[in-house]
Image (cartoon, rainbow, N blue to C red):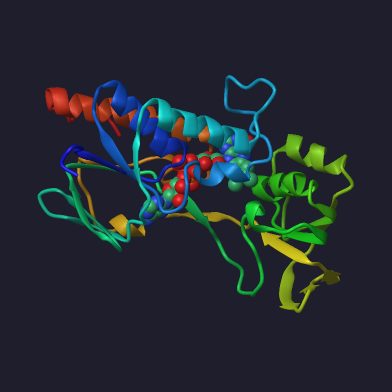
Amino acid sequence: MAEAKVAIIGAGPAGISAAVQLKRYKINSIIFEKRKIGGLVENAHRIENTMLFPNGISGKEFVKILEDYVKKYNLKIVYEEVKKVNKADNFILKTKKGNYEFEYLIIATGTRPKKLPFRGIKYHVTEINPCKKLLIIGGGDIAFDYALSARKICKDITILYRSNIKALPVLVDEVNGKGIRVIKGEIKSIEDNIAITTIGKLQFDEILAAIGRVPNVEIVEGIASSKMFVIGDAKNGIYRQTSLAIADGVKVGMKIWRMMRYGDTEGDW
Ligand SMILES: Cc1cc2nc3c(=O)[nH]c(=O)nc-3n(C[C@H](O)[C@H](O)[C@H](O)COP(=O)(O)OP(=O)(O)OC[C@H]3O[C@@H](n4cnc5c(N)ncnc54)[C@H](O)[C@@H]3O)c2cc1C
């Protein structure tokens, strides 16, 4: 892959934005993606806080736009999971198929869900089947957003939250007007299709949890380099937002261009 000096891991909003910005400087990059273009955003019911979409935009429409960028800028995507990165003079990316070497590395790997210790729970709304009774565990934005998405395929929806509702007030209002039950309680175990909780037994045929997320950064653990950049949800802690991921992509593209052109190592990152 001698044609590119920059590797980007992750084809979500952050990774695509970085690749587009680099391309505008005529810098080719290679994006490694283990699943498909779009990342987490495909799960979003409606994104309203990313500017330029005053009427909001669904997660799926958003993914379509990212796909259009990939086509327009002729971005190169290698559909392989990066299992580990080693640093010698350059970065060596290890996948099942082999090793790839790059001078610059952008980590746009996003996050993965925190898991509950029970079997049968799903963590992304795109994974659930049409159902009669859906139980959602969690009290944050994602749990409430999942409930709104799931209305298209599930009749009876309950959100079970443990301590506080942390979701955006506008999401809570939207859920409240839609006949979705919101109950305070904690799940203790699951027996077949029944959740045993602190407020009694809750029957379900699909169960979904959204109890927080952790960054996917283990593949670069122990590596520190001025030529490696962690961007988007993988670095933004609780501030996991599409606009911030896109902004990170633009910024890293500018930074790498300056480093290549002027040897610029100044400026914060
Ligand atoms: C239900 C829901 C609703 C949301 N609503 C909003 C909203 O209204 N507004 C808003 O701004 N944001 C919203 N978000 C958040 C938004 O989706 C994220 O902020 C955004 O997707 C982050 O982009 P990213 O590129 O940093 O990471 P991601 O989108 O997570 O992309 C990371 C990519 O990296 C790939 N990857 C990971 N590890 C590897 C590896 N080792 N090798 C190869 N590929 C790898 C993944 O497959 C993935 O495609 C919502 C999220 C959810 C789940």
